[in-house]
Length: 495
Image 1 (cartoon, rainbow, N blue to C red):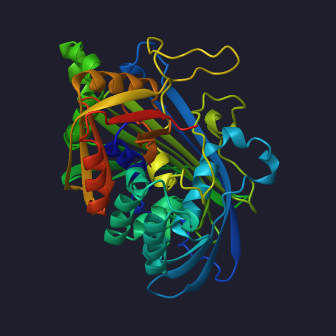
Image 2 (image 1 turned 30 degrees about the horizontal axis):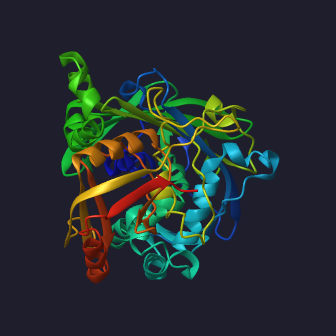
Image 3 (image 1 turned 180 degrees about the vertical axis):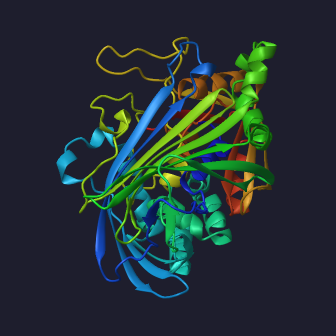
């Protein structure tokens, strides 16, 4: 995924709010959700994302990347009344003991650890409805205050490489989203709560094995209302285990969803402008189509109506790119009964090299909201790299000449921006560098001083470099430095 719009795909994949279907009369009785207060439940959680951008690259499959994680999270219902519940989730980024030693192939754990540090919490207390759907969150002010501190002072109080580094990595955008909708904290740190609630209903329900029940609702995607059709089926019951297995399939209306994704698709095509120029009419039409589907299997207790196990696959295709997310949750005091997708157990994966460092390091970004859905793509075979016989290929730094530099108001975040326009020759060099450095963390230096450390998520065309910073005087000083004839910018991979 190569733009902030694509990050929204992973966001919507993780935080759908579902209404439980009305089950038919006659058949299997499924009790209303009635958890025991004060009892801590431990859940084994496995996740993976598969991102395929091979359409935009020379070699089919060259940019298919997978990232996964394995976690053990704990949940306690603190109180329960006729209006709802208060629930505490205790969160951990540690790998479960039985897969210790395989951290290199579980990069989500490293990102999630940084997320917990950046949000300043390892526990969340939620107010939920009687189905378990989160509807409010305690401690929002403290979390947001911590995020502001991280943005202002750097992780752990360590100043970033210029305060602009925090803005470049998206911290301020995240804070604005959290202030507008605090439940995004839940979706970022414990999306398991929503998935478990999918299979739970506070009312006793009755359902027949086999027949499907269809419901519909609308979801908002950037101001576009997208109809979503949901189909529920009771697949089987286990009298011994006292469980029922349900399936849910969801499909977004293709025309409406495609309409909602056109800005993101246009953004992506800008990043691959040369490739886009060569598309046939059929290819262009295909690129402009988008689709989204969701498949869920749920094992529900016939004793208290709680979800004991859930397996979810969400697929989003748009702009020639496909993102697929997998989630499997199992309550550890109950035996597993659903098959695990192969990606969650595979020993060998084509994983991105993210060079994730733990916070507090000014070099690490805010974590899961920025990184989860954007595994980087490897360079094309045609990209220019300097070979190293003793190790992996290295991308040479580039020195860039400045045509103009001016301070402007930031249109999408707080503070100001320094808009740097490169000369045509340097713009071409910069585009080649960013194409080769996809997925890598880079450094931008002005007069040998590091000013930002962005990860390259898409080739940068047009010759613009934008540096965000609320201190307009600092930006003005940089702009003045760049007016001298000998002024140059160095861009390199972060050592």
